[in-house]
Amino acid sequence: MLLEATNVSKTFGSRRGGKSVHAVVEANLRARPGDFVAIVGESGSGKSTLARMLLDLVPVSSGSVTLDGIEVARMKKGQRDFFRQNVQAVLQDPSGSLNPRKKVGKIVGEVVILHRMARGREAIQDKVVEALELVGMTPAEDFLGRFPHELSGGQRQRVLLARAIVLNPRIIVADEAVSALDASVKAGVLQLMDDLRRRLGIGYVFITHDLSVVKKVAEYVYVMKAGEIVEEGTKEKIFGGPEHPYTKTLLAAAPTLTTSAGKTTRVTSAAKVADAASGASTTSAASTTSAASAASAASTTETSVG
Ligand SMILES: Nc1ncnc2c1ncn2[C@@H]1O[C@H](COP(=O)(O)OP(=O)(O)OP(=O)(O)O)[C@@H](O)[C@H]1O
Image 1 (spheres, rainbow, N blue to C red):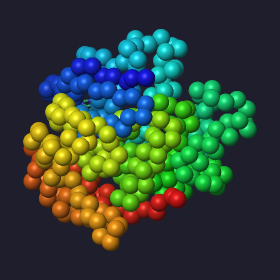
Image 2: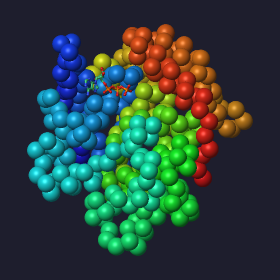
Image 3: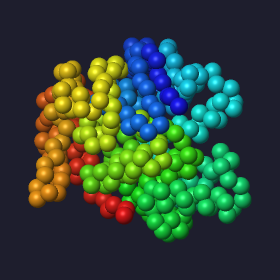
Image 4: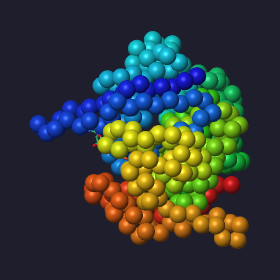
């Protein structure tokens, strides 16, 4: 299976007579099951718009998104159902992805019903329990009756992941899926995603503004700036020999990891990140946003699952 964007562009029309926005310009991207592909760039660089086009949530202005050569925009009902099941989205929880009035069992269960993955109360519940266990929420029965607000941020993110993997997808497009989490929880969720990649062969298109987040797990990285993919390559190339000045800037802004007594400790100093981001960025508004989100991520505390 191959999910591919070919020369995709997205231009948003002007609001109240202002200029139109070229959110994505002629981007090319490929993702397969088992891949861990990252799209990295500062706020406003077009990452989310590209992700939404890959998910067929936003129509392309030009170019095409295809799954196994079939253009998503032209898919017939059966093809579209196949696409929807196999290419899943995991969005950031603070964006309101989880309905606060529904319990975990229902949130995951209704996807099973919608996609007719199982029939009958018991069979549906079995699917939900299996998915919760796969994301490390054990014993799953303890979580079925909880509302999202009764969970930690890391657990909510795991529910979002469970809601996606319950459909057996081949590719997950994850937009800032761990950005709001505390560093150690973030590492736990990323590790889980990587484990699921190895165990189930799921591929990821993982979107983040923070290059350091993907250093451990990504195999291939696309760097976006002002709507364009300015550099791409294997993790080794991007981290070991970045060529584009913007990639170098992102690397300089990324928090450092140091190792002491055999233990890896993240020394995310919010001030340091903010300094690096504001000093290095080309647009001050964007750098303030990424520095602020990095700072808030660094200051949040959370309890991890498992
Ligand atoms: N629906 C829309 N209408 C008009 N402009 C939009 C719309 N969605 C996004 N944009 C604009 O497109 C550009 C790219 O936005 P996008 O959200 O894709 O970037 P991003 O890299 O994901 O940023 P962030 O990390 O802050 O989400 C921005 O200038 C944004 O204001």
